[in-house]
Length: 170
Image (spheres, rainbow, N blue to C red):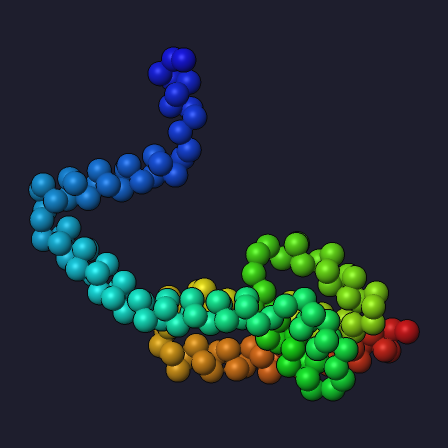
């Protein structure tokens, strides 16, 4: 195999990593203070994020352990506010690409789940637990808490409005 063919097999992400490491080495050789300031900033950022990562890891582990398909089916049969609460929590805890959820949501719609509840679920997918640590570091936990509460309230309002609009359409 030729050298050029071997280079084509290397993913672009490796080129990016090699470029960044090379830049850091150049700064370490010629401008040590810039490199050291960058590494100190990185260390401080990671140090702040470790407790949040541990909390998120524990929260995701518990949710994966306790939220089973039977648990989901049981709570989707609930009436009233419990169903809304379940869709909010489900939207927040859901992960993966959105298109993977469409078949499940379509099946639930056929089984009687309202479009408003589906909209509520989809709206709450914007709240991403794995991204919360970084958001808290950049914006503060108070801001993220208020933003999350507002998003949850608006998701319910949006779901109710969609249900009302769909009733008018029929």
